[in-house]
Amino acid sequence: MNAIIRRIEELKKEKDAVILAHYYTDGQIQALADYVGDSYYLSKIATEVPQNTILFCGVSFMGESAKILNPEKTVIMPDSYADCPMAHMADLDKIKEVREKYKDVAVVCYINSTANIKAHSDVCVTSANALKIVKALPNHTIYFIPDGNLGRYIADRIPEKNFILSDGFCHVHTSIKRENVERAKELYPEALILAHPECTGDVLEIADYIGSTSGIIHYATQSNTDTFIICTEMGVLYELELKNPNKKFYSVGHRQFCPNMKRITVEKLLEQLETMNNTIELNDETYHKANRALDRMFAMSK
Ligand code: 13P
Ligand code: SF4
Image 1 (cartoon, rainbow, N blue to C red):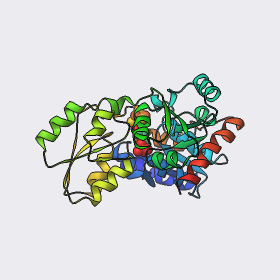
Image 2 (cartoon, rainbow, N blue to C red; image 1 turned 135 degrees about the horizontal axis):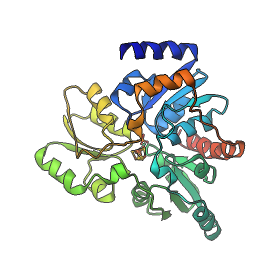
Image 3 (cartoon, helix red, strand yellow; image 1 turned 60 degrees about the horizontal axis):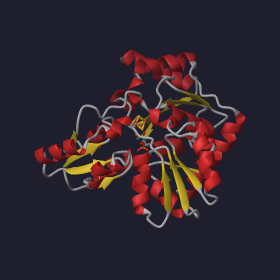
């Protein structure tokens, strides 16, 4: 493994490349990356790094967002099949239908969506900034796509607006069942429950904290409590344990595992640095339109 890592470091210099990784990737990938973060941080840092090539250790929508924001850069994915199913769970015909019916609607798309869906939306959000952005939008009617659980979480906190929700979901987060969280709480009664807003409403109801992956890591790190039940993908345990060696983190079950994020391996990373085959390419119109939704997100999350 050391030889592979040395070769990756050499190729990074040769190819003027930087490695970005999401908290859900394997710990080995996170250890190797130059920047690790949640989807908001990674999209932002992609616009700030000086390197010409971005090797994106995440799922397709993350690499696509980096490319939309940096069309002049080369964005490579270590595994071109690492895709987020939820990113495809919105329908362009339904967007058209809602726009025709509600003239004042803002189509708000979660960053977990394809470039094409972003191109048909008014603004993009992540789990870290969705509440702030939707609250600040001048529109009364909000069509939130594709995640129904995140949409419901926001809608419950902004009762003055009219929400149209969709039925997209994350199979990893919806596999976290309330009865299992309650069972974990019985085993560790002193533990705080930290949940990602992609979890179902009945899990969020009993959570002590709800936030993005970065939010969860930050909350646990600054907390005086030392035991936590983590309701999100297990990859976050790497950073949680690194930052908090004396605290205890429990997952709810073995299905808190995103198979797409885990497709990324050190070997594939090396292969892509060598061949640079899996580049992200989008047509000009999609770049331009999707960029508007992402730019508006940055402007509104300041
Ligand atoms: P974050 O925005 O918290 O990084 O979450 C991304 C994601 O894919 C959650 O399943
Ligand atoms: Fe998509 Fe869920 Fe994996 Fe996040 S955890 S990338 S929403 S499948």
